[in-house]
Length: 585
Image (cartoon, rainbow, N blue to C red; front, top):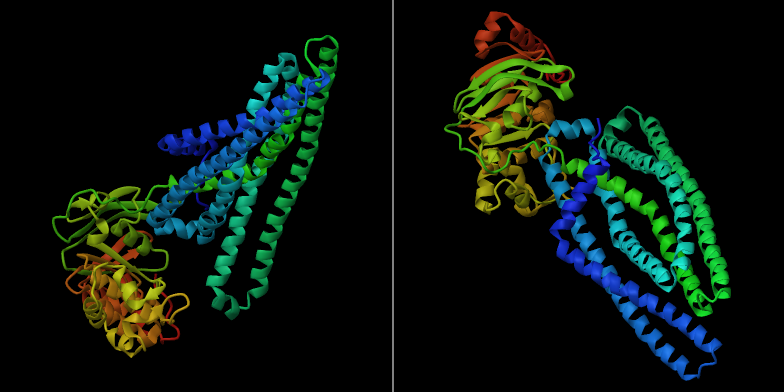
């Protein structure tokens, strides 16, 4: 699975909506650009006038007057052009900034399983390489492209103003340019999409290899991963080579179009001058106007290379923006109590194989329920539905009588601690304050003490001011999990969901981490996806899930005595040594 890509129509609609919001800025930039383009045409008109005056034997005063006009027009054109480029770049930059914020905002609210199935590399390539591609386009290509369009349009109008027949002769180049573009665009557009996808694939492989470096080394998979990265890099290289080949062939077609237009003006001018319909100066002005179009038209056509790359990247980013968020907004109803209810819940990923079948579960306020079962039974999926991170395909999850999708400020009522805990870069205190921004040092110390982490934190040289995360002090898996549990204490939700939150500790620290989890969730309604059955045994109630269905539930002792599926799991658990204990997801 990859993250969605917006259609060309949807991408255009998003861009038009952004421009409408900033129509004042856009109008000012357009007017300044028109002034710049018009001022740059004045010297060419003046040149034609000078040619006619010289042929007529005019005095040297004409040259002085022409020089003054050219100088003033050049100053106005240069200043207006510079200001126009700045205004356009600023407008585009603000739109890009808004887009970047929208993408990050949506990425942070996407359901976790969506990102897991799509892969982090795809998302990282969008917020990294794709944003960079658009940034390059909006700061350089788009301003120059707008300038080229304005100058080209006014130049054609000026040629028609000199003589419509000269304008018509120059316009003969338009079909040639159109043929060149119609040949190039259908061939290059798929190439740019493939190029962005190949970059995303390469990024995903690099991320997987970097994050799983220890596993790669342990199983001696270095050569396989290098071969996969080399294949992806080679694919990206081949796509770029094909695109460059198309581009060089476009250049030849553009040059032929320029030859057609200039030749037509010179030939038409010769016959018109011979017939006395236009002067030599007017023909010269028309020829120079068309020749001056070589650079803006060439820039315009060659900019399609960057514009298409930026357009492909924009479609990928808008695709993320349009995705359905997994976290509900702040508006909604307040739960009546801390009960958690799942009613007749079905779930399937992308309409494929069904994971859950009619699951019904009620957890009373303050009750601690452990969810156990074999690998693939649907435990984590059920926990994510209970947390509001996933929407069931049928049925409903509710908190205090309110569907999770309608709970106001859901994360203040329901919090999740997962097996994969991230330690953010910064100090320990700043990491803890992510749960509650106003938490004091005393609050943080109290939370750490509650989960049994204050001892090792106090032993650090800088205590709560110790830098952690990337580039900082490296925490053990058990310490990182205790830090996450301390965040839970600071957040103080009524309902806590632990999705195998003690699985990373290993046998040595598992008991201590189970005690930390029990302390952090004391007094809260708690749903525990149990990795270790000793953690399930201490729960008020155990729910056994197999193949997406609840097969039995009850207290530990009664389930063991019943001799059912839980008794089998418990017997297997008791018979394992710490080094043999597999996960029971």
